[in-house]
Amino acid sequence: MNHTSRTQGARSAIRRSTAVRLAATAVLAGPAVTVCDFDERVIPESRRRGLFRTHCTGRTLRDHLGLPRPSGQA
Image (cartoon, rainbow, N blue to C red; front, side, top):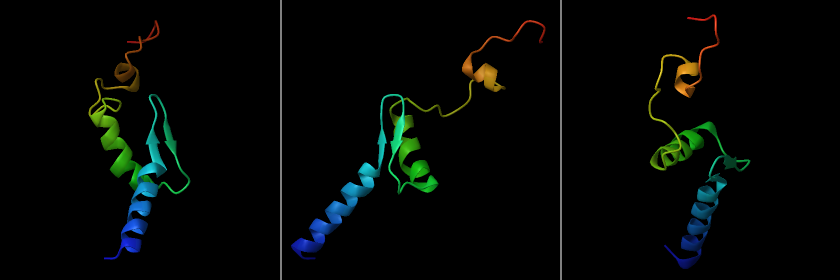
């Protein structure tokens, strides 16, 4: 492998790794991001950082989010 191909490979890797970025509360994705990229890169990193739960804490979305039930509902 020559220097040029290694440099191009490094540039490609940098472009791929910077296509998807995590912010503190939002995900900023470049235009070339696919669902597979998101699933393979963003979700595992979010879990590692404690930003994405690995399981649900309740049976319903309301329970999962810790929201109280409106009065009149069981």
